[in-house]
Length: 281
Image (tube, rainbow, N blue to C red; front, side):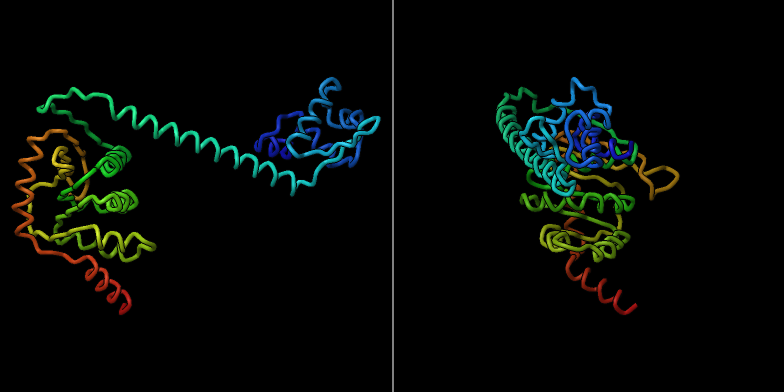
């Protein structure tokens, strides 16, 4: 029964799985012997065997009566894998073409939104906040200015792939952090592959000693507000995303004032110092 389930998991139906297993056991056989051993109804045994031939699991000898032989599982299973892989690649190619066509068509739909239109959404749970963050870095076109809370450090690592994709698109990311955020460099020093190099080139970071609020501005039109938990400043209570050009402009001015007072942090130098400290210890 377990072997039948395994064969059904890769695409055979119940009758095909039973007939193939019988042929593996019996060796070269006629349809009558296979149906008796496999309990496939006699009225269906020939169509089942023909289907197995078509799928590459069975060979047929065109004699009278016909005889059948199971193809070695190593070969038959590799064959079905390659066939399914090719089918999936064709389906993905078609899907990609359809998606690109849909993108072009849908982005051309006239947008009648008012300039003063305001829209906001809120995320409370950790999973919702992660979705928020992914959507922000996925949608950004030009720039992100962000004053992140310390409790945002774990989210940063979840977002590294999205951040590097944004950097690859030419997005300018300015990060203004408190000294407590230096822990970030310790974690980044353990990253492998292309991510550290891209972050060194794509992130502009400055240290600021004191700031009262944590927020972000995306493309000068979207504001992200971080709300810490009232009982624990290192825990997030909620995140609010507001599409409001006026508010974004006001917060951008506040951001620029703080940015000009900040101490430039060279991420490459920080990572090199962190690596040296780790080697010494």
